[in-house]
Length: 238
Image (cartoon, rainbow, N blue to C red; front, side, top):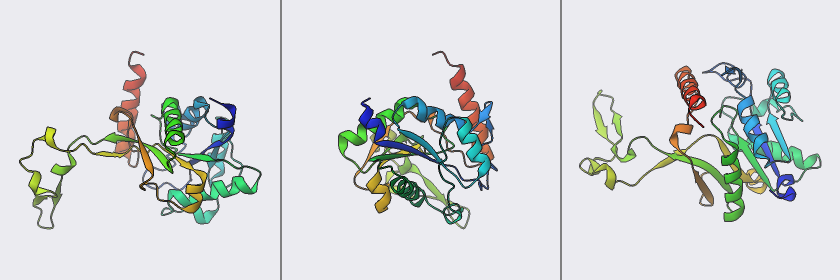
């Protein structure tokens, strides 16, 4: 990677202290290390970034971040640390802070703190793609396990109905494949973060990754599943 590319890119890992459904999940032990350490390691290993920064409101999280090689140059304001604060304002704050303190990144990658399956090569693939396409954002996607056209809802009566009943008799192989956000990282132009451009916008591009490396971690059940999947992948032949 060209040195000028690296100096023009920054990773920001949002990691607030107030998670509710899985308490302290950002620094909870995951396979012998704090969860936060895994995405920090992937970001550093990618060698894409001039800086790897953790944006947090929590001093304990800040200490863990520094111990694993990330920078914590600021403590995130309380007004950007609540349950309902979206990703874009947090990223815009980080970009503005960098600009006000001598930095001028062209690309800023938001990396989620609970992404233990993140690979350095995916980060690099996303960086290559955003530069190649000129997109505002690039993020990893993977396929749904089941055709979304066959999804059903449960009505107030307790009965079910299809969202798209016209596809009841359509063969699965004839249905359009659908993808969802993998929830690992978002490469974005610094200007897109500052302008508040929606991530799912017409100028966003997907990076396809296999679904066996994707697992949301929002509940205790998710956590347990992630631990089992991670153990399987760690024990698989290289």
